[in-house]
Image: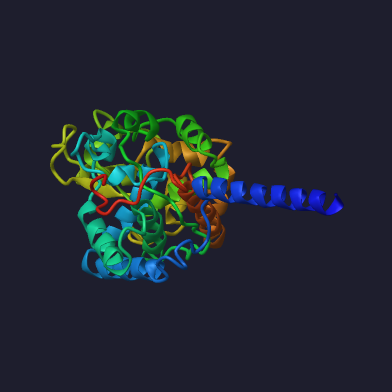
Length: 327
């Protein structure tokens, strides 16, 4: 009888393990080096492609960083941003919030290299995350070691949600803090992530309201005159490539120059001035302006948090063969 009872308990325990295994497979989590068995060279292939594209088209590195933000803030880090309008899908790229985004075509080069090595294995969502990580390195930013993988791709887009979830160029600081907080990113990391503006630029259509008909008094006067030279008309052509860079000193480097600029009232957007003066964020801005190491540490943390926003894992979603289209 005792042996029979022991057998039943052992059998029940085995059944629980089997059920747990099934549940875990269907509801997996992100992990480090997810492709170590299914595609061991995956991360190296992405890194090599990011480097090659950078030396051919330097601004691709900036695009990879922006892709991560626009993809992950809208519902999930699931590569919905990369979908083009086709097969019943309306692309998020059509949104006004995607104005100025580019280089989507080069994602296909990365994906094709992965498909050649490991067909239907590496997700487009992981390409978004890892290309951002490697792009940051090309921009002389921090080398972020702890980017997990195992994301899967969405089977649709969220065009209708983009306008609500992606902050507008003239949104208040409170609104931006609320947006990041809703996806689990604290104020300190939010301030650090906004430091990505150090490699960004603002199109004239989004900043002329600070220059015309009168100059925003919070702007440094000499800087405002420079901006008026960059944007000479109060009604710029939205299709023209008229813009000003956030950082004139190190425009293609992810560093703390952005914070130095906004403390000197040389930010392009209203939120830049608010960031430097609001008591919730000003202490972080001041510290980042004087300590690039601290900025890079918090920026790395912010990128990790952002990249893990509500991912599809396990048997959710799919692994697209072409990042532009659902299978």
